[in-house]
Structure formats: C-alpha cells, structure tokens
Length: 160
Ligand SMILES: [Zn+2]
Image (cartoon, rainbow, N blue to C red; front, side):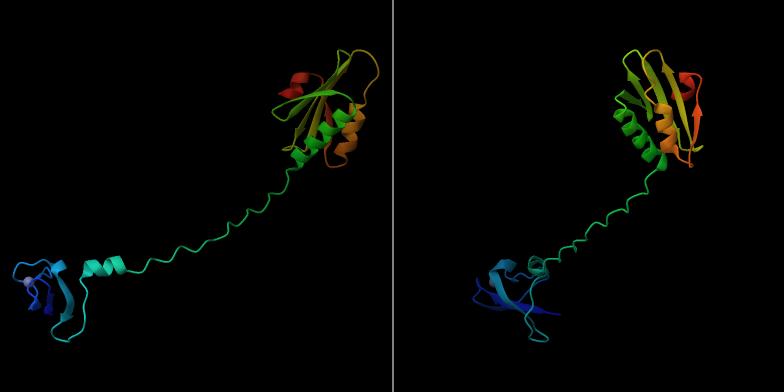
C-alpha cells in the first residue's frame, strides 16, 4: 500500500518512501497524519505502534499449594517419647545420630536406639551404684506391643 502524510517541512501532503519519510529528504518525524492512499484510513508507523502496545497482563498470582505433611515416622515419634521419658527420670541426655545416651553422674548410664527398620528398640545400660532409675520398664512401657525391646550386652551393639 502507498502511504502518504503531511510533511511539516514541505507544508503539504506527500507520498512517503519506504522509511515513512518525505521523498524530499525530510525524516519521518517531520511527517504526521499518515494515511493509506488506497483506503484513506489513518495508519501509524510500526515503531510507534510498538510503544503504544498494551502492556501484557501480569501473570496471575498463584497461591503456593502447601505440601501435605508427611506421616510422622513412628521410629522418630518413639525416639522422642523415649527421650522425654529419660528426661523425666532425671537423667542427663545426649544424642548422636538418633541414638540417645543418658546418665546419672557416675552411677548409671544407658544408650537407647530405635531401629525402625526392624521394629525394635535396642537398650544397653549399666548401673554402678545407687538405685535403678527404671529405664528398662519405661522403655518397655513405651514399646507396647508394636516394638520388640532387646537388651544389648555391649554399648557398641546399640550405638553402632
Ligand atoms: Zn518534506
């Protein structure tokens, strides 16, 4: 299509060249009122259309879907219960790789591990003096019927 426009330098309408410029050497920005000479419709240079292009709508904000909470690992739950129980027996507790060791001064010490894979609790303990704090009974009570309690002869059997 042929484009014409009003050149402000020439003071008249002119057929424009491929650069939308006046054929007498005046640049496109000297021209206004562009129109299609075939249809008479107003036209706008493409580079001006780009600046006027509507802003793309913002991406819709999607609420993050929370991951469903995983079912608690029964071994982890039991480990926590045992720890709380040891604490209530007034034992000093240390933990290493999920294995709890508890002690009462130099008189008593024990190590407990929950073996979730085999469904058992390994307990090693040594009483040197004073009263038995009752860890065995406490652990057996927590184990219920779901967990087997194994009394280990050596601490290394528990702590791995
Ligand atoms: Zn001109």
